[in-house]
Length: 329
Image (tube, rainbow, N blue to C red; front, side, top):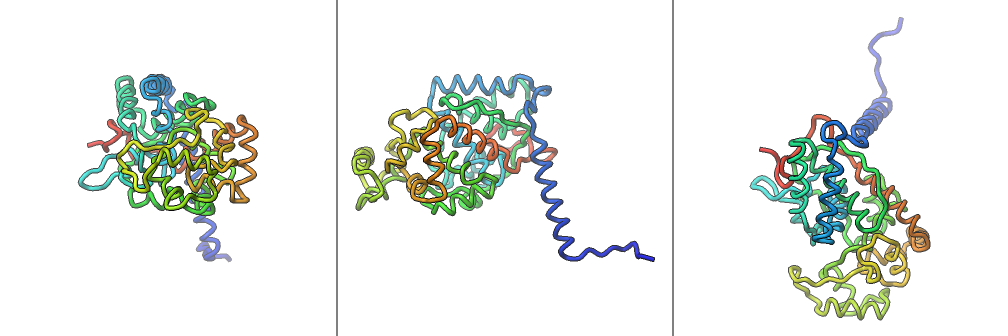
């Protein structure tokens, strides 16, 4: 007669562990849903949209900030609004990381939060504000409307020490950049599409001068290098000075495929931009996007959704912050 005490082999136990982990990830993601606030705060998404539009007409660069917020928040452990937390006695803010240099307009996230708190106190998370404002920011920049799920909760912690492990630097190798995105479920084509966000906004000279001084990077178009030297005339720019160059001088505030046309002409601002062309795994997608703006936008939308659903905090974990820059008392 067989014993009821079943002994699992080490390999069986490993398989069970992996299945449990996959189920946990599946259920965390499935806690997110379209129109999550339809009953608890029916106008939530409309309020975010109204505020994004109002802020865009006052400060056009906010639309770019919302997209950057999503990337810098969701790449680090989770889409949990940890990027928004200020430094406290107990922990330093992720905002202080060099990887987050130049990020701004955080105060306007509080403007959106206040409007939501007035309508539905303690209901809409800052993490969902990060995602929804990015969605509406994309539209303000001429991109597609993207259906984004909601239902995230907010982190109680900052992860400053983790930022450099998760967010690639602008001069990292392409294989490293791809591996970072793959770790959150974004494939090579999706990574090339997300880097297309460089088509909007601007880059501080601090991140450009190493390609200009003491000698010009030979992969830069000479005329473009002259333009950059005009924008960044000194090899040691002041990080606090307003010294910037734009990736796209044709449609600088439109989320379109001009970026890909530029890098094919050796007019990329950052080393990572140039590497998209020189790396054989990414080059075919650069060509594809350069030839078809609609296809670029559809792949950008698809990749942004994947990034926005990275390991959300849901259920009874985390909290709904009353103020996005502080945890609740």
